[in-house]
Image 1 (cartoon, rainbow, N blue to C red):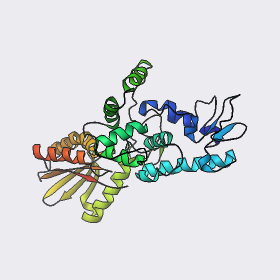
Image 2 (image 1 turned 90 degrees about the horizontal axis):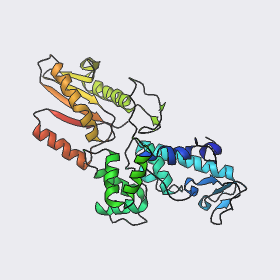
Image 3 (image 1 turned 45 degrees about the horizontal axis):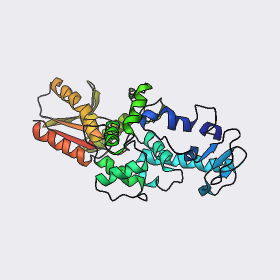
Image 4 (image 1 turned 90 degrees about the vertical axis):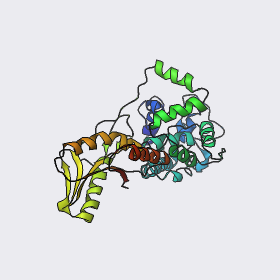
Length: 325
């Protein structure tokens, strides 16, 4: 990505245009001038702003201590790359120290986080929400801490967008006006595309949970298969028989494993439970059956409440297992 591909006047296909405008339904970052991108191209005849560094076409943040726009953009591009990597790994605390303004960098982080962040980016709203959940937040509180407390308190029955709307309705006075404007313009929530079977290579997508889908389901499945083979032997681990992700055979029981790539344990369970019960029902083996739903992330407090409720009320040998990839 070069500088004109990152940001520029008259180009609606730049990285910054996609983050700010074309993915607005995934979380708005309206407000603040174009300096939120770290560097931007000024319009024709626009004066050089005093508070930034400037050349004949571009203005950028002084905090980078760089006088050349090419070198400045190299630093911005490196920071964007770091944000993407940290988001994919869930190392959100490392993003706090990156110099790009919070409004923009946390929207980028969300887009590459597999929905492990809540799409709220306005600092004043984040502070109100964090205080509501018991964090003594101020303007100096790292965004990663405020995001973490929101994620820990996300109700199991809500996805990140529903939770975001719930919080905005409660803590952002202008939210309803903004929502109505979007509805009138025809904004629609985009659904995630179907995962291709056994493909673990990155794929470019349009506006979905992220721009690069890492085929987490298949990576989780492959890692789980290896773990089970190492523990029980290859002859006891059956992959994708009758649509079952993995079936483990033991002398006195059978275990069905259903793998899901949802960003929350509760989401994996909601997607998988019906499937795994049907697989169990249609299996003719008479041995007792166990059912394990597998996801990437450890359950939050709200997820654990959901799991405990299911175990209490369902006469079912069921559990949730997270596997890091």
